[in-house]
Image 1 (cartoon, rainbow, N blue to C red):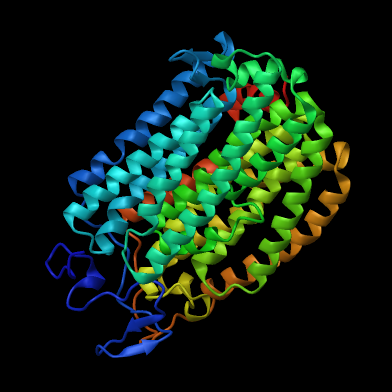
Image 2 (image 1 turned 30 degrees about the vertical axis):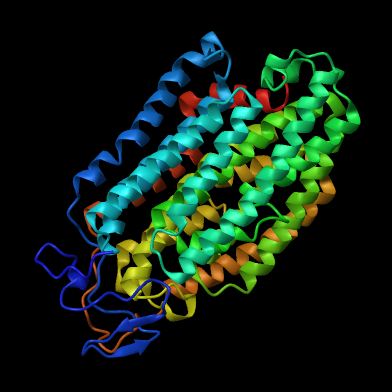
Length: 513
């Protein structure tokens, strides 16, 4: 890592003094003294030079989004597209996930240059970082395109390997520890998913499905009634545990707050915004097979139980949370449990709402994590109790963070309001009602905790001895991704427009139709 940049092109708050690392809880005072709990009054996540690697970092996200848009224009009319001997398949569910991955990745990668410059990342480290991000996006794209369950498993495992290095990018003791924790827990989960995949392969071979097609998703879904129910039930349970670990669901969820709090803010945005949803989308492929082989009751009960347990843990941990980024990580657990609950309901309305929730959550959480990265550098800490008066200190940044939290709370006009309303309505119409009733109570607790802690950060006078200082501007480079993400999330809350048919067809695929 390079030392502090003190040249004329450096960010305003980095000239003349070293930066306080995010999460330390200590900011530098006006005379260079350490003032616990007080952030620097002259910092700003303002404009920074964009290196060549930063500009090239937008190429692969833009390519994913463009390919998703092109497929969205053709797949609803002409049907799924296959390639490489049916190893890859682009159906409506794939296209929806590609659009989500591409949109979130564009926002996160647009924020990368500002965050890397503020962290004093040198050019070789920046190149390594961007290569890892490209590999991460490639692995997620392969996971949503995979038509073979073996390829799907390999792609999900590849995301674990790549993101472990991204979580430990800062090379501090805390970040390396978080990376190891992430690797150990997710590898255990992926091992369970591998065992479930092997059992499903065994059931397929016993049912007379040729070896070449024993892990082909379309073939298994069409011939699921031939699979042995006992083996399929065990395989499904293992897959829910395994891919549920990558999706942030209990009981293998403990990696999520540590990894999200230590990773660079754009990486946290990608992991929370799309990696969790990509892993859950892989689980949905198995659900289609399980429902056809066992009936919808087994996966409904299993997913509803996991959703309620995860939501209970998220609500309890949010009530006791005192770190900004960890708070957002536990919020991700809350939203993934809602996605699992909507999937358990299983009606067309619920499944369409689930997919809309994935997209809306990805956009809102990307804005929230990127904003939290700017807040950490502005205030010198991620401790909620030591961040005060953000709206007065940096009005634009405070407003963006507040709007992202409003979106995550499921309030209008953002997309999460429409998706949560759809999940609740579908749950009361088709069940499981007991799980939905418990979820509503737990959501109230999570809502109160997230709102109270955000208000504590935003309101009141700004910290510091010089309370009459001018507000700190956000800067165009830092603010553009935040505004774009909030605008896209709000647009999804108003209408899905030309994506309505795609969303409906993707929901039908999850429902096994």
